[in-house]
Image 1 (cartoon, rainbow, N blue to C red):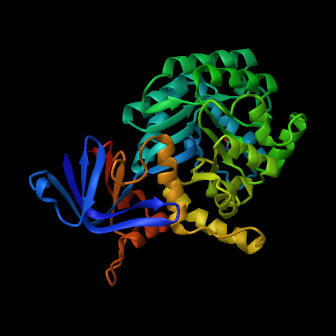
Image 2 (cartoon, rainbow, N blue to C red):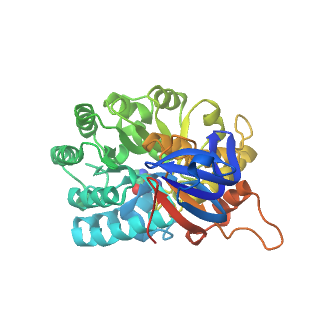
Image 3 (cartoon, protein in one colour):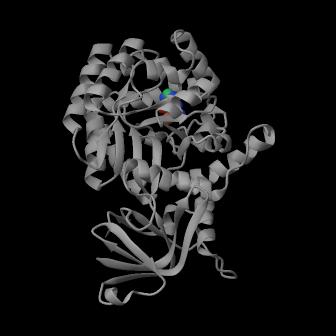
Length: 418
Ligand code: GUN
Ligand code: FE
Protein backbone atom coordinates (compact mmCIF):
# COMPACT_ATOMS: atom_id res chain seq x y z
CA UNK A 1 0.00 0.00 0.00
CA UNK A 2 1.07 3.62 -0.52
CA UNK A 3 -0.31 7.01 0.45
CA UNK A 4 -0.10 10.05 -1.81
CA UNK A 5 -0.72 13.63 -0.74
CA UNK A 6 -1.90 16.27 -3.25
CA UNK A 7 -4.94 18.27 -4.30
CA UNK A 8 -7.14 15.63 -5.94
CA UNK A 9 -9.55 16.19 -8.86
CA UNK A 10 -11.53 13.68 -10.91
CA UNK A 11 -14.89 13.33 -12.64
CA UNK A 12 -17.66 12.25 -10.34
CA UNK A 13 -20.14 12.05 -13.19
CA UNK A 14 -20.64 13.79 -16.53
CA UNK A 15 -21.40 17.18 -15.01
CA UNK A 16 -19.47 17.17 -11.76
CA UNK A 17 -15.84 17.30 -10.78
CA UNK A 18 -14.96 15.82 -7.41
CA UNK A 19 -12.43 18.13 -5.71
CA UNK A 20 -10.45 17.11 -2.61
CA UNK A 21 -7.96 19.87 -1.75
CA UNK A 22 -4.96 19.00 0.44
CA UNK A 23 -5.92 15.32 0.76
CA UNK A 24 -4.48 11.84 1.10
CA UNK A 25 -5.28 9.01 -1.30
CA UNK A 26 -4.51 5.40 -0.38
CA UNK A 27 -3.61 3.00 -3.17
CA UNK A 28 -3.52 -0.73 -2.53
CA UNK A 29 -2.89 -3.45 -5.09
CA UNK A 30 -3.05 -0.87 -7.87
CA UNK A 31 -6.46 0.38 -6.81
CA UNK A 32 -7.77 3.42 -4.99
CA UNK A 33 -8.80 2.54 -1.46
CA UNK A 34 -10.03 5.93 -0.26
CA UNK A 35 -9.43 9.68 0.01
CA UNK A 36 -9.22 11.57 3.31
CA UNK A 37 -8.36 15.12 4.53
CA UNK A 38 -6.08 13.63 7.21
CA UNK A 39 -4.20 10.31 7.33
CA UNK A 40 -6.49 7.72 8.95
CA UNK A 41 -5.21 6.20 12.18
CA UNK A 42 -4.67 2.72 10.66
CA UNK A 43 -2.50 4.13 7.81
CA UNK A 44 -0.09 6.14 9.97
CA UNK A 45 2.83 3.86 9.07
CA UNK A 46 2.11 3.50 5.35
CA UNK A 47 4.83 5.07 3.11
CA UNK A 48 3.78 8.54 1.96
CA UNK A 49 4.65 10.41 -1.27
CA UNK A 50 3.97 14.11 -0.81
CA UNK A 51 3.26 16.10 -3.99
CA UNK A 52 2.62 19.25 -1.96
CA UNK A 53 0.32 21.68 -3.72
CA UNK A 54 0.38 19.83 -7.07
CA UNK A 55 -2.86 18.38 -8.44
CA UNK A 56 -3.48 14.66 -8.86
CA UNK A 57 -5.83 13.74 -11.74
CA UNK A 58 -6.68 10.53 -13.60
CA UNK A 59 -4.57 9.71 -16.67
CA UNK A 60 -6.11 10.53 -20.04
CA UNK A 61 -7.52 8.27 -22.76
CA UNK A 62 -7.01 8.91 -26.47
CA UNK A 63 -9.72 6.98 -28.26
CA UNK A 64 -8.66 7.75 -31.82
CA UNK A 65 -5.06 8.10 -32.90
CA UNK A 66 -3.00 6.94 -35.91
CA UNK A 67 0.46 5.89 -34.72
CA UNK A 68 1.96 5.67 -38.26
CA UNK A 69 1.06 9.33 -38.87
CA UNK A 70 3.25 10.46 -35.95
CA UNK A 71 5.93 12.02 -38.19
CA UNK A 72 3.28 14.06 -40.02
CA UNK A 73 1.84 15.87 -36.99
CA UNK A 74 1.56 19.60 -37.62
CA UNK A 75 2.28 19.20 -41.33
CA UNK A 76 0.06 19.63 -44.37
CA UNK A 77 -3.05 20.23 -42.32
CA UNK A 78 -4.10 22.95 -44.75
CA UNK A 79 -5.34 20.18 -47.07
CA UNK A 80 -8.87 18.83 -46.92
CA UNK A 81 -9.59 15.17 -46.18
CA UNK A 82 -9.53 13.52 -49.64
CA UNK A 83 -6.40 15.39 -50.78
CA UNK A 84 -4.77 15.04 -47.40
CA UNK A 85 -5.22 11.26 -47.48
CA UNK A 86 -3.94 10.94 -51.02
CA UNK A 87 -1.02 13.37 -50.88
CA UNK A 88 0.15 13.20 -47.30
CA UNK A 89 -1.21 10.25 -45.33
CA UNK A 90 -1.26 7.28 -47.69
CA UNK A 91 2.34 7.83 -48.88
CA UNK A 92 3.51 7.93 -45.26
CA UNK A 93 1.57 4.80 -44.29
CA UNK A 94 2.99 2.90 -47.27
CA UNK A 95 6.44 3.27 -45.67
CA UNK A 96 5.38 0.97 -42.82
CA UNK A 97 6.06 -2.01 -45.06
CA UNK A 98 9.58 -1.50 -43.69
CA UNK A 99 9.65 -2.94 -40.14
CA UNK A 100 12.80 -1.02 -39.21
CA UNK A 101 11.20 2.31 -40.07
CA UNK A 102 8.00 1.30 -38.25
CA UNK A 103 9.94 0.37 -35.11
CA UNK A 104 11.68 3.75 -34.93
CA UNK A 105 8.43 5.68 -35.39
CA UNK A 106 6.39 3.54 -33.02
CA UNK A 107 8.98 3.73 -30.22
CA UNK A 108 8.91 7.54 -30.43
CA UNK A 109 5.12 7.60 -30.67
CA UNK A 110 4.62 5.53 -27.52
CA UNK A 111 7.16 7.57 -25.53
CA UNK A 112 5.40 10.78 -26.55
CA UNK A 113 1.98 9.36 -25.73
CA UNK A 114 3.04 8.51 -22.19
CA UNK A 115 4.93 11.79 -21.77
CA UNK A 116 1.67 13.57 -22.58
CA UNK A 117 -0.24 11.67 -19.92
CA UNK A 118 -2.13 9.28 -22.19
CA UNK A 119 -2.17 5.84 -20.55
CA UNK A 120 -5.14 4.42 -22.44
CA UNK A 121 -5.57 4.52 -26.19
CA UNK A 122 -7.32 3.11 -29.24
CA UNK A 123 -4.76 3.15 -32.00
CA UNK A 124 -4.78 2.60 -35.76
CA UNK A 125 -1.73 0.88 -37.25
CA UNK A 126 -1.45 0.34 -41.00
CA UNK A 127 -2.30 -2.58 -43.28
CA UNK A 128 1.10 -4.08 -42.39
CA UNK A 129 0.78 -6.92 -39.90
CA UNK A 130 4.41 -7.08 -38.78
CA UNK A 131 4.64 -3.37 -38.00
CA UNK A 132 1.25 -3.34 -36.29
CA UNK A 133 2.19 -6.37 -34.19
CA UNK A 134 5.28 -4.48 -33.00
CA UNK A 135 3.06 -1.52 -32.06
CA UNK A 136 0.65 -3.70 -30.08
CA UNK A 137 3.39 -5.60 -28.28
CA UNK A 138 5.28 -2.42 -27.38
CA UNK A 139 2.20 -0.70 -25.99
CA UNK A 140 1.24 -3.84 -24.12
CA UNK A 141 4.70 -4.10 -22.59
CA UNK A 142 4.48 -0.50 -21.37
CA UNK A 143 1.11 -1.25 -19.75
CA UNK A 144 -1.05 0.95 -21.95
CA UNK A 145 -4.67 -0.18 -21.71
CA UNK A 146 -6.51 -0.15 -24.99
CA UNK A 147 -6.71 -1.45 -28.49
CA UNK A 148 -4.54 -1.59 -31.60
CA UNK A 149 -5.93 -2.37 -35.04
CA UNK A 150 -4.33 -3.70 -38.18
CA UNK A 151 -5.97 -1.46 -40.78
CA UNK A 152 -7.99 -3.07 -43.57
CA UNK A 153 -8.31 -1.46 -47.01
CA UNK A 154 -8.90 -3.17 -50.34
CA UNK A 155 -9.82 -0.25 -52.59
CA UNK A 156 -9.65 3.53 -52.97
CA UNK A 157 -5.96 4.15 -52.29
CA UNK A 158 -2.56 3.93 -53.96
CA UNK A 159 -1.62 0.41 -55.10
CA UNK A 160 1.08 -0.21 -52.52
CA UNK A 161 -1.36 0.50 -49.68
CA UNK A 162 -4.04 -1.91 -50.82
CA UNK A 163 -4.59 -5.54 -49.86
CA UNK A 164 -6.43 -8.19 -51.77
CA UNK A 165 -9.60 -9.03 -49.90
CA UNK A 166 -8.75 -12.62 -49.00
CA UNK A 167 -5.23 -11.71 -47.95
CA UNK A 168 -6.52 -8.90 -45.75
CA UNK A 169 -8.89 -11.28 -43.95
CA UNK A 170 -6.19 -13.93 -43.57
CA UNK A 171 -3.72 -11.47 -42.07
CA UNK A 172 -6.36 -10.04 -39.77
CA UNK A 173 -7.33 -13.47 -38.48
CA UNK A 174 -3.69 -14.30 -37.78
CA UNK A 175 -3.37 -11.00 -35.88
CA UNK A 176 -6.49 -11.70 -33.80
CA UNK A 177 -5.41 -15.25 -33.07
CA UNK A 178 -1.94 -14.25 -31.97
CA UNK A 179 -3.06 -11.50 -29.61
CA UNK A 180 -6.29 -12.87 -28.22
CA UNK A 181 -6.32 -13.36 -24.47
CA UNK A 182 -5.89 -11.20 -21.47
CA UNK A 183 -3.40 -8.37 -22.01
CA UNK A 184 -3.23 -4.61 -21.50
CA UNK A 185 -3.38 -3.81 -25.23
CA UNK A 186 -5.72 -5.92 -27.30
CA UNK A 187 -6.54 -6.24 -31.00
CA UNK A 188 -9.58 -4.57 -32.56
CA UNK A 189 -10.95 -4.74 -36.10
CA UNK A 190 -10.04 -1.60 -38.05
CA UNK A 191 -11.67 -1.20 -41.45
CA UNK A 192 -10.30 2.25 -42.35
CA UNK A 193 -13.59 3.73 -43.60
CA UNK A 194 -16.26 2.92 -46.17
CA UNK A 195 -14.46 4.44 -49.21
CA UNK A 196 -11.49 2.04 -48.79
CA UNK A 197 -13.38 -1.17 -47.95
CA UNK A 198 -15.44 -3.46 -50.16
CA UNK A 199 -18.62 -5.15 -49.01
CA UNK A 200 -16.85 -8.53 -49.13
CA UNK A 201 -14.06 -7.29 -46.89
CA UNK A 202 -16.47 -5.85 -44.32
CA UNK A 203 -18.59 -9.00 -44.28
CA UNK A 204 -15.50 -11.11 -43.78
CA UNK A 205 -14.37 -8.88 -40.93
CA UNK A 206 -17.85 -9.16 -39.39
CA UNK A 207 -17.39 -12.95 -39.39
CA UNK A 208 -14.01 -12.61 -37.67
CA UNK A 209 -15.47 -10.20 -35.12
CA UNK A 210 -18.07 -12.78 -34.21
CA UNK A 211 -15.63 -15.68 -34.13
CA UNK A 212 -13.09 -13.91 -31.91
CA UNK A 213 -15.46 -11.62 -29.97
CA UNK A 214 -13.75 -8.37 -30.95
CA UNK A 215 -15.17 -4.93 -31.63
CA UNK A 216 -14.37 -2.36 -34.28
CA UNK A 217 -12.95 1.09 -34.75
CA UNK A 218 -13.45 3.14 -37.90
CA UNK A 219 -14.25 6.64 -39.19
CA UNK A 220 -18.00 7.33 -39.22
CA UNK A 221 -19.78 10.11 -41.13
CA UNK A 222 -16.64 12.17 -40.83
CA UNK A 223 -17.30 14.56 -43.70
CA UNK A 224 -19.96 15.26 -46.32
CA UNK A 225 -17.57 13.87 -48.94
CA UNK A 226 -17.13 10.65 -46.96
CA UNK A 227 -20.87 10.23 -46.31
CA UNK A 228 -21.57 10.76 -50.03
CA UNK A 229 -18.92 8.22 -51.01
CA UNK A 230 -20.44 5.73 -48.56
CA UNK A 231 -23.88 6.30 -50.08
CA UNK A 232 -22.58 5.77 -53.61
CA UNK A 233 -20.51 2.69 -52.81
CA UNK A 234 -23.13 1.06 -50.55
CA UNK A 235 -26.49 2.07 -52.11
CA UNK A 236 -28.24 -0.71 -50.19
CA UNK A 237 -27.52 1.08 -46.89
CA UNK A 238 -29.49 4.09 -45.68
CA UNK A 239 -26.49 5.61 -43.88
CA UNK A 240 -22.78 5.14 -43.17
CA UNK A 241 -23.33 3.36 -39.84
CA UNK A 242 -25.69 0.80 -41.41
CA UNK A 243 -22.79 -0.41 -43.59
CA UNK A 244 -21.08 -1.77 -40.48
CA UNK A 245 -24.31 -3.05 -38.95
CA UNK A 246 -25.15 -5.00 -42.11
CA UNK A 247 -21.64 -6.46 -42.16
CA UNK A 248 -22.12 -7.81 -38.62
CA UNK A 249 -19.39 -5.60 -37.20
CA UNK A 250 -21.32 -3.93 -34.41
CA UNK A 251 -22.32 -6.58 -31.93
CA UNK A 252 -19.08 -8.36 -31.08
CA UNK A 253 -17.36 -5.84 -28.81
CA UNK A 254 -16.89 -2.10 -28.40
CA UNK A 255 -17.64 0.03 -31.45
CA UNK A 256 -15.76 3.31 -31.93
CA UNK A 257 -16.74 5.69 -34.69
CA UNK A 258 -14.41 8.65 -35.10
CA UNK A 259 -15.87 12.09 -35.85
CA UNK A 260 -19.59 11.42 -36.35
CA UNK A 261 -20.02 14.98 -37.59
CA UNK A 262 -22.88 14.66 -40.05
CA UNK A 263 -24.96 11.78 -38.65
CA UNK A 264 -28.48 11.21 -39.94
CA UNK A 265 -31.16 10.08 -37.50
CA UNK A 266 -30.45 6.54 -38.66
CA UNK A 267 -26.73 6.87 -37.88
CA UNK A 268 -27.57 8.01 -34.35
CA UNK A 269 -30.17 5.29 -33.83
CA UNK A 270 -27.86 2.51 -34.99
CA UNK A 271 -24.76 3.65 -33.07
CA UNK A 272 -26.84 3.99 -29.88
CA UNK A 273 -28.49 0.60 -30.42
CA UNK A 274 -25.07 -1.03 -30.06
CA UNK A 275 -23.87 1.27 -27.25
CA UNK A 276 -21.21 2.57 -29.63
CA UNK A 277 -18.91 5.49 -28.95
CA UNK A 278 -18.61 8.59 -31.10
CA UNK A 279 -15.06 9.89 -30.81
CA UNK A 280 -14.73 13.65 -30.96
CA UNK A 281 -11.38 14.82 -32.41
CA UNK A 282 -11.64 18.62 -32.39
CA UNK A 283 -8.29 19.66 -33.91
CA UNK A 284 -8.66 17.09 -36.66
CA UNK A 285 -12.10 18.31 -37.57
CA UNK A 286 -10.90 21.91 -37.62
CA UNK A 287 -7.98 20.99 -39.85
CA UNK A 288 -8.71 18.38 -42.48
CA UNK A 289 -12.40 17.70 -42.08
CA UNK A 290 -13.89 21.17 -41.63
CA UNK A 291 -16.91 20.18 -39.58
CA UNK A 292 -18.02 20.42 -35.96
CA UNK A 293 -19.59 17.60 -33.98
CA UNK A 294 -22.94 18.33 -32.31
CA UNK A 295 -21.41 17.27 -29.02
CA UNK A 296 -23.91 18.94 -26.66
CA UNK A 297 -26.97 17.71 -28.54
CA UNK A 298 -25.62 14.16 -28.83
CA UNK A 299 -24.68 14.05 -25.13
CA UNK A 300 -28.23 15.11 -24.27
CA UNK A 301 -29.54 12.21 -26.34
CA UNK A 302 -27.44 9.81 -24.29
CA UNK A 303 -24.74 9.24 -26.92
CA UNK A 304 -21.44 8.00 -25.53
CA UNK A 305 -18.78 10.50 -26.57
CA UNK A 306 -15.05 10.37 -25.92
CA UNK A 307 -12.17 12.40 -27.35
CA UNK A 308 -9.24 11.60 -29.60
CA UNK A 309 -6.14 13.38 -30.86
CA UNK A 310 -6.47 11.85 -34.35
CA UNK A 311 -2.78 12.38 -35.03
CA UNK A 312 -1.95 13.55 -37.69
CA UNK A 313 -5.18 15.14 -38.91
CA UNK A 314 -5.06 16.52 -35.38
CA UNK A 315 -1.64 17.90 -34.47
CA UNK A 316 -1.25 17.68 -30.68
CA UNK A 317 -0.21 14.46 -28.89
CA UNK A 318 -1.81 15.61 -25.63
CA UNK A 319 -5.43 14.56 -25.71
CA UNK A 320 -5.99 16.90 -22.76
CA UNK A 321 -5.83 19.78 -25.28
CA UNK A 322 -8.74 18.19 -27.11
CA UNK A 323 -10.93 18.46 -24.02
CA UNK A 324 -10.39 22.23 -24.10
CA UNK A 325 -10.92 22.41 -27.84
CA UNK A 326 -14.18 20.44 -27.51
CA UNK A 327 -15.54 23.19 -25.28
CA UNK A 328 -14.46 25.89 -27.73
CA UNK A 329 -15.94 24.11 -30.75
CA UNK A 330 -19.24 23.51 -28.97
CA UNK A 331 -19.57 27.26 -28.52
CA UNK A 332 -18.94 27.90 -32.21
CA UNK A 333 -21.49 25.23 -33.07
CA UNK A 334 -24.05 26.90 -30.84
CA UNK A 335 -23.20 30.34 -32.25
CA UNK A 336 -23.51 29.38 -35.91
CA UNK A 337 -26.28 26.78 -35.54
CA UNK A 338 -28.20 27.72 -32.39
CA UNK A 339 -31.12 25.47 -33.21
CA UNK A 340 -30.71 22.26 -31.21
CA UNK A 341 -27.08 22.86 -30.25
CA UNK A 342 -25.59 23.82 -26.91
CA UNK A 343 -22.14 24.48 -25.60
CA UNK A 344 -20.60 21.84 -23.39
CA UNK A 345 -18.99 22.56 -20.03
CA UNK A 346 -15.37 21.94 -19.07
CA UNK A 347 -16.38 19.17 -16.60
CA UNK A 348 -18.24 17.43 -19.43
CA UNK A 349 -15.19 17.63 -21.70
CA UNK A 350 -12.84 16.40 -18.96
CA UNK A 351 -15.21 13.51 -18.25
CA UNK A 352 -15.14 12.51 -21.94
CA UNK A 353 -11.32 12.47 -21.87
CA UNK A 354 -11.01 10.55 -18.58
CA UNK A 355 -13.86 8.69 -16.90
CA UNK A 356 -16.13 7.96 -19.86
CA UNK A 357 -13.23 6.54 -21.87
CA UNK A 358 -11.34 4.99 -18.93
CA UNK A 359 -14.39 2.96 -18.02
CA UNK A 360 -14.49 1.56 -21.54
CA UNK A 361 -10.83 0.51 -21.55
CA UNK A 362 -10.58 -0.73 -17.97
CA UNK A 363 -11.84 0.16 -14.52
CA UNK A 364 -9.98 3.47 -14.66
CA UNK A 365 -10.23 7.16 -15.70
CA UNK A 366 -11.31 8.24 -12.23
CA UNK A 367 -9.79 8.34 -8.73
CA UNK A 368 -12.92 7.20 -6.93
CA UNK A 369 -12.42 4.28 -4.51
CA UNK A 370 -12.27 0.98 -6.39
CA UNK A 371 -10.74 2.44 -9.57
CA UNK A 372 -7.43 1.26 -11.02
CA UNK A 373 -4.94 4.01 -10.15
CA UNK A 374 -3.60 5.44 -13.42
CA UNK A 375 -2.86 9.05 -12.56
CA UNK A 376 -0.89 12.21 -13.30
CA UNK A 377 0.52 14.91 -11.06
CA UNK A 378 0.30 18.37 -12.64
CA UNK A 379 1.93 21.54 -11.38
CA UNK A 380 3.44 24.88 -12.36
CA UNK A 381 0.23 26.40 -13.67
CA UNK A 382 -0.61 28.98 -10.98
CA UNK A 383 0.41 32.64 -11.16
CA UNK A 384 2.67 34.16 -8.53
CA UNK A 385 0.03 36.77 -7.73
CA UNK A 386 -2.79 34.25 -7.33
CA UNK A 387 -2.93 30.56 -6.59
CA UNK A 388 -5.49 28.63 -8.61
CA UNK A 389 -8.06 26.33 -7.04
CA UNK A 390 -7.37 22.66 -7.92
CA UNK A 391 -10.15 22.45 -10.52
CA UNK A 392 -8.88 25.68 -12.13
CA UNK A 393 -5.41 24.14 -12.42
CA UNK A 394 -6.94 21.22 -14.32
CA UNK A 395 -8.84 23.49 -16.70
CA UNK A 396 -5.78 25.67 -17.35
CA UNK A 397 -3.66 22.58 -17.94
CA UNK A 398 -6.04 21.47 -20.69
CA UNK A 399 -5.88 24.92 -22.33
CA UNK A 400 -2.23 25.92 -21.98
CA UNK A 401 -0.41 23.09 -20.23
CA UNK A 402 2.41 21.07 -21.76
CA UNK A 403 3.98 17.71 -20.98
CA UNK A 404 6.43 19.64 -18.77
CA UNK A 405 3.57 20.38 -16.37
CA UNK A 406 3.15 16.64 -15.77
CA UNK A 407 5.53 16.10 -12.86
CA UNK A 408 4.79 12.43 -12.11
CA UNK A 409 2.86 9.54 -13.61
CA UNK A 410 1.36 6.44 -11.99
CA UNK A 411 0.25 3.30 -13.79
CA UNK A 412 -1.58 0.49 -11.99
CA UNK A 413 -0.66 2.16 -8.70
CA UNK A 414 3.08 2.28 -9.41
CA UNK A 415 5.13 5.40 -10.16
CA UNK A 416 6.45 5.40 -13.73
CA UNK A 417 10.13 6.12 -14.27
CA UNK A 418 11.21 9.42 -15.81
N1 GUN B 1 -10.47 8.78 -42.91
C1 GUN B 1 -9.87 7.72 -43.44
N2 GUN B 1 -8.61 7.62 -43.02
C2 GUN B 1 -8.41 8.65 -42.20
C3 GUN B 1 -7.29 9.07 -41.44
O1 GUN B 1 -6.21 8.49 -41.45
N3 GUN B 1 -7.47 10.18 -40.69
C4 GUN B 1 -8.66 10.86 -40.67
N4 GUN B 1 -8.78 11.93 -39.91
N5 GUN B 1 -9.71 10.49 -41.38
C5 GUN B 1 -9.58 9.39 -42.13
FE1 FE C 1 -8.57 9.23 -37.94
